[in-house]
Image 1 (cartoon, rainbow over the protein chains, first blue to last red):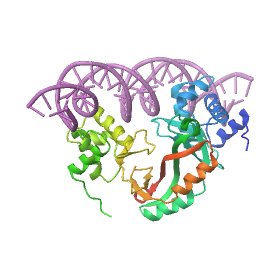
Image 2: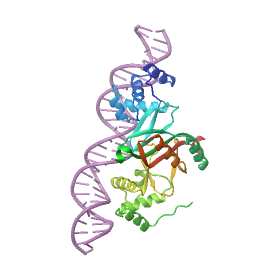
Image 3: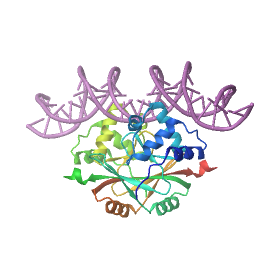
Image 4: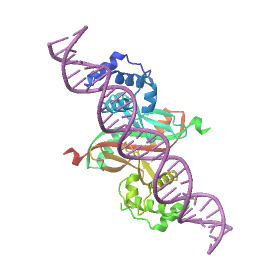
Length: 143
Length: 143
DNA sequence: TTCTTATATGAGAATGATTCTCATTTAGGA
DNA sequence: TCCTAAATGAGAATCATTCTCATATAAGAA
């Protein structure tokens, strides 16, 4: 259950594995994402990074997302969130509309969902990714 | 199966029903949304409207969304889409990542999904809305 | 290790989406 | 029809994201 923080060298190897240069900016981004528990915005990232540059961070999160090392999360807030992409952990999010608290949940109906969608829309042959988010009220906000 | 276009008076009554003033800007937005088949952006809306003002349109789509007459759809494009909210029709979207083609599909596992999420996250008591989008490649783009 | 070069970075400007301001207009009840 | 609170419209302002370009750096070659 406990997430372990990867060592810098492991992160460098992850990057090499995808053919990407292991620059400090990228290693640092992955390191920060590994120790936060919630998806974070680029703004958050820039502040959390030892030397966060806005343009570089934007460039790198998109690049890392394209290579499946991080996942972009869309929480209907008008800006993107990012989290580490753990292939083995296909989780989704439940967000409190009052305080923006974000929690994870996992779900096994995605295959079923995908099959059903492809059956209904023969004009689509492949589903490459999905986004499932629930919006609700957390206990603290329900008073 | 066929969607009928509501008469202006019906739209006015819908607005009144929620306590909102039936202004021409709002009536027109609902009229446009009723005749397009896909979710549209605010930019699209402004062009499709007889007299579309940007600020007014933004204000009104959010307002109409808050009152559940329209639904905001998040397709990971960096800007919001809007569609009429037909309570009886809980559909979701499948988007082609190559050409942005959008199609609907419906799904019945939402209750199951919600129950499962609330079981896993006791810190949440209520789910008030959900977002499920699939991203894939449509037949035309698959060549 | 040092050299070389393609690639990445950083700072600021540019762009695009969305929100705000405020003077003017309008919906809808009296 | 009149009155007033609410809505509109035009532009400026803000926020997220992308672009530009001069400088720095990763990583393979020597």
